[in-house]
Image 1 (cartoon, rainbow, N blue to C red):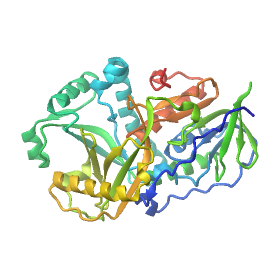
Image 2 (cartoon, rainbow, N blue to C red):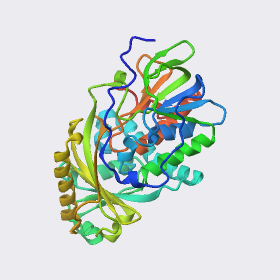
Image 3 (cartoon, rainbow, N blue to C red):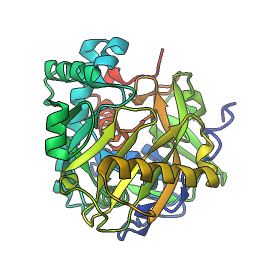
Length: 411
């Protein structure tokens, strides 16, 4: 094999405590303990939401496809998602345009909106029961972007062909009883149970011939003239025409870059039928602050909220810090909504990846032709995972995609 030190970074603890979704029914996926074959057309590393969407996009009943994970399917960082499936990107459109050019920024924002709609159609077509609901989003002015910046953002989005309404303080108070200097109201977002969504996608892919294996770690790889050879921790060698690493925040060592970092975040979920405004059932809410607060409701009346991010990849492991973070999230929520939330029913912490632009990296590993990587999702993991599945499915089919060069490894 090659002289690489290993395919993945050191194994991370991808979440702490018990996320809400761990108690969900119908999130188990049948998996084998060992691969049935040695040779595959495509091997997907990772059985979270990225790997599941990738498997579903590639499953055609003709190619031999393997999904392999060191954990049980669904049980990685996907379980820590709050599943606010937004089309908005972490970096506002008017700021992203300054970073990558107005044309490119508008294109990726439009693609993000399209991917949410496409995901909704996919869930419906496959009949996946995962509490998928279309939502509006409400972005509240904060200490990072105030009323003037949101007005500029609204104008930029409209120029890019995106629907958005700019709300002034009086209208915001009248419609939502929220006291902020401005807000942006937009549609084309969604919410779901991410564990059920992932399990449903994997099960659908398996019915179309995709093989799923758990408890196997890929330790090394080497490109050959015909594809890629992978080594496993139990001494096996597997070969594939293409390998796609959907390993989340345990990203490939070769993909480390100064513009990409791992940070820590915290989230809570209330008891069912928590005190909440009636309008919240139709909205995802987040604020333009640092640190920021975001929240949504669930069909059974819980409020899921999160934020308080820290630029420390290990901070989420601190139990004492978690208690403080949960208290801050609850306090912010109570002050903003004017309700008493009380002690949360669930609280969890996790690491997640960010990039300077807020965009994912969907690219070949540097120096490779047949090893592909999907990483750096920030707050739009599910949305960007859908885009990644579309882009790589086209690439492996020898087709072009107009956005293929907009999510590349930083130069």
